[in-house]
Image (cartoon, rainbow, N blue to C red):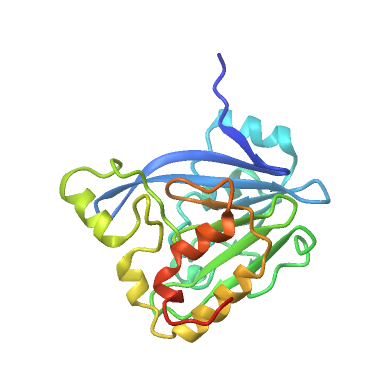
Amino acid sequence: MTRAYLREFGPGLWVGEGPVVPFYGFPYPTRMALVRLSDGGLFVWSPTALSAALKREVDALGPVRHLVSPNVIHHLFLGEWKSAYPEARLYASPGLRKKRRDLAFDADLRDSPQPEWAADIDQVLVRGSFAMTEVVFFHRASCTAMFADLIENLPRDWFKGWRGFLARLDGIVEPNPGAPREWRASFINRRAARAALERILAWPIERVLIAHGESATANGAAFVRRAFTWLLARSTLP
């Protein structure tokens, strides 16, 4: 039986599981997403390693037009995707141009969607941290919010031994999804972060797609609220 690398997550939205990558000594699963836009082109979110088999499945869905990094951590495979799809436009999340001077970015991701995908995808910059700014996306057709590292939800047995203990302490393990504790502590401007979260929660979220761990296929808004308890504790958001 031929292995399928992509699976449908919602209308016009596919996900692919990437390789496990090390991050400060912790093995992390990776996940990418593809959105078919109204013009038939593909928006590729957080691309993972590109194999020949994966490329065949991607090409069967449509032409790759946009390669997107949601934050400065999710950049490892941008170069190989750009090489494979030279006509695609490459977009930098805040801070990534400085980190990846070897890549020729076509545009920067901002606090509103690019005209090329505004009809299909909305986006918000979650500011307030001195460490990193993440771009959160919302795919309108599938009512899916897409988070890279602001929500992690790893299985309880994913990390072993002391790594498992630290991951649970960090608040990134089921049934308590969220951002790593050290990143949460870097949000010195909680007002800015809450303003971004307010915009996110105004979306009609049904599903939540995350890069690391178990996504939510129902009750998406409640899932997001649970993941941001650390930010909502003293907030009056509805």
